[in-house]
Structure formats: structure tokens, C-alpha cells
Length: 320
Image 1: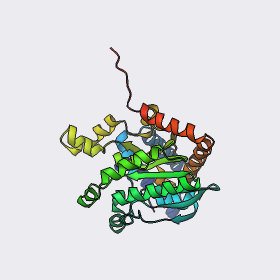
Image 2 (image 1 turned 180 degrees about the vertical axis):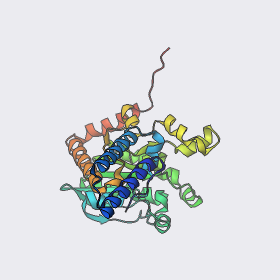
Image 3 (image 1 turned 60 degrees about the vertical axis):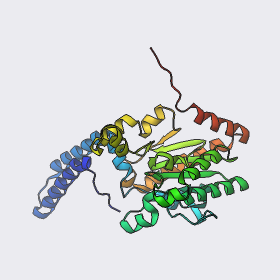
Image 4 (image 1 turned 30 degrees about the vertical axis):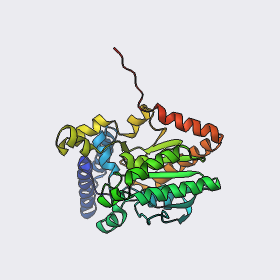
């Protein structure tokens, strides 16, 4: 689908419209405007580089939320083959916000789980805007235990603003479902690789992201709270979301520097939604490479490293 421009991309759009007008005039009036066309194309490329090489944290959040961005099922179709969806948590029901099943990645059979959003109102209502219910997390854990039983690696694709906070979810113990996932994934005796492909919101994301390797798409974000939620608490108004985004250190580059993730997966210029196929190829390469690397580590050693990695998070030293 054609990507609608974000606010900070409008200078590029205006220049592209001007270029189209020059090309139209050149063709209609049979005038040689090649020098002007070359000048404008150079200007467009310079503007594009200037904007995309200096993105703020808030601008990356906007890209992560773009509705044309590839979602989990898009990546399943582009990166994986032989996908067989498995439904239901065997306790309450199925959660369309958390699809999962068996798939093949570059010749390796694996279990894939993750969050799925919608691109229009109907899809979003069906997928609950990517916010999973307790049964979604319990289904994900059921599939991960299936992977453990048959010696299959687990791939988790994270893209959620957060777990669903509604009354029904609370009645069915959403916090307990996520907590159990955190505990069980820490001791799951198989390889786990997670990738944050869009939004990585709080416990809703972490509930399927306790992994041996955590990757992030270049324009994804991963945070304990949304910028708007943080702004509402600290500044008492959501208009301070850009300030909150900067303070939260939620971008892939910042999190890599803090050693909270293992790898930043590059995206096409402007974001994955500008070239879904190229973004999918890059993600598939990164997932396959990381799966191959961690699969060679003995299981007991892998579990010790996984536990130690998450225990290190949040430690800091004060300097006087």
C-alpha cells in the first residue's frame, strides 16, 4: 500500500510534487528541462538524507506506528514459508492479536509467535489493535512449550502498544499470564530469538521477548511506557510526548548502546514501509544468522547466559 507521509516528511513530498510538475511541463510543451530535473532530483535526495539521518526519537516512534509498515503476518509471508497457524490457549479461547504457529525460516523449522495489528477499523477491532489478552500470552506459551518438546527454535515478532488493560483481561488475569511467560521463557530449553518490528510496549512486549537474542528494526521502539503515557505522568499533558520519547531512551540505537538488545536491523531509507520486501529480506537474514549462532550453544550454557543477561539489566554505578 502507498505510504502516507508523516508530518516531518512533507518537505520531501512538496519537492516531489514540484518535480512531477516540471516533468509534466517538459513533456507537454516539448521543452528540454533536463538540467532543472537533475537539480531537483539532487535536492530531493539531499533533503531525504538530511531528514532521515537526523531523526528524533519521537519521529522514529511515528515511523514505528505507521499503518503501512509491515506487520507480523506480512513478515511471516515475506520471510517464512510453510506457515501453519495453531490457535487457542486450551483454557479460554483464541486471541487474534497474538497469532502463532509452525513455520520454516531459511530451511529451519521453527515456532513463530507475535503481535498482529490491523490497518483499518475492522481489522483493528478483530486484532484488538495489537494488544493481546491473557489467552494470547497463554497461547504463545503453549506454542513455545511445543517448540521445547520437539526441539524447535522459537521466533518472536513483537509489535504492540501494550497488553490489553480492559476489564475482561483483568478478570482473566493478564498480569499473571505475562508473569508466567517471563518465568517460563527464562527456563525454556530451546533457542529463542525475538525481534521488535514496530512498537515494543512495556510488559505486553516483554511477555514474548525473554530471548537469547533480542533484535530491533532500526525504526522500532521498545519502552517501559509509551511516550504519551510518560508525558501524562511527568508533564501532566500528552503534548510533551516528544520530550518523553527523548528521555526514555527507547530507540534501537540507544538501547543497543545500553546493551539491552543485541542487534539493530537496518531498514530501507524512510522506514520499512517504503520497501517491505527489502526490509523483510534484511530481517530474515538477521533472524536466521542469530538462530544459527545460538543454536550451537549447549542448552545448559544457553540458559545460564539468558538468565545472566536479564539479571544484568538495570544495574548502574554512581560516580561522585
